[in-house]
Amino acid sequence: MSTEFSTQVVLDALQSALPPRHAFLPLHEPTFSGNEWTYVKECLDTGWVSSVGKFVDRFEEDLAAYTGAKRAIAVVNGTAALHICLLLAGVKPGDEVLMPALTFIATANAVSYCGAFPHFIDSEEKTLGVAPQKLAAYLDEITEQRPNGCYNRLTGRYIKAVVPMHTFGHPVDLDPLLEACQKFNITIIEDAAESLGSFYKGRHTGQWGLLSALSFNGNKTITTGGGGAILTNDEELGHLTKHITTTAKVPHRWEFNHDMIGYNYRMPNINAALGCAQLEQLPGFLSAKRELAERYRRAFTDIPGIRFFSEPANSQSNYWLNTLLLDEECAGQRDALLEATNDAGIMTRPAWTLMHKLPMFAACPKMDLSYAESLERRLINIPSSVMLGTGLSNA
Ligand SMILES: *Cc1c(COP(=O)(O)O)cnc(C)c1O
Image 1 (cartoon, helix red, strand yellow):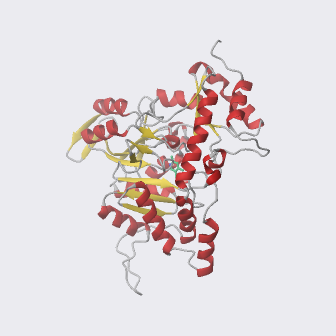
Image 2 (cartoon, rainbow, N blue to C red; image 1 turned 180 degrees about the vertical axis):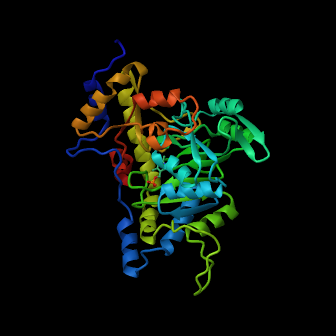
């Protein structure tokens, strides 16, 4: 086949974009080059390591300031953040929640924690995220508006929300999605776990839905060890989010009163200390990641059958995980490429197994998923750590 590339050519292209090294190169390593030691030491020295402390307040303020959201609430991880977003959006047992089939398991798990059903939707080429026009046409076909909301005639359940996920940091095409959700009366909860530092039309991701979830797991753009946050522009919801994630305790000097079933989902101060130090470095991290992405883009411009995925128009991506896409005719070469690169000490990884193929979600409703299925066959993530870019050398 004329479009076929040789594994060696791809390996050479990767090597040319990466700095010289000796050790195995993971997909995404954290960088601790700022005030991490100072802030964490302060927690240990003062004893404020746990559920309250000044770093939690500061991290929430800094996150709100950076993203432009009115409120940011720090929590234990991104999955917990999604869980609370869905609960507060009114997702109830027996409801359906739309989400891409191409996502990390957390999105589907969080819906299940609410007793609701994931309903899988297709992705599109230009963003790797949900395909808004295809979704609108599908909803036209299968739903009707009832006094209680968007009714799925096929399953007899209500579609309460959609969770667009900004895949590998690349923003979903949000304007047409907002339009469709307005038309069909569906709430948007953004899974912005991968997209801190990513903007759609100049506005930060996670600012477009009613609520959104961020993650600061060890492999994300910035890390708190484990952690997450919820963003919202609704003050009242922000207040309720803080309350329900901190055991719903009614403030009092000594009494323990709780006025609803709450969750112990708060982020410990010691993790928030790490977060404050990481957030200070985010602009430097982002420019290093863009530099690396640019080197990859150049290295892959002339290789037939394979291309580097670049940020969608109208968007600025954080390039959290860099992505190669094989042409459909070359999908059969994927596994050989994964093997050769990992053998050469360069970690590469295929896309997540699509959610509807997992046993616990196999019976969930889904639309035609042909593009997601195509992506699953031919997508490869490549090393993306901040330190591989050059922008950090003077940070
Ligand atoms: C990382 C991630 C999450 C949250 O993961 P946690 O490990 O719970 O912080 C959620 N959704 C997506 C798409 C993710 O990549």
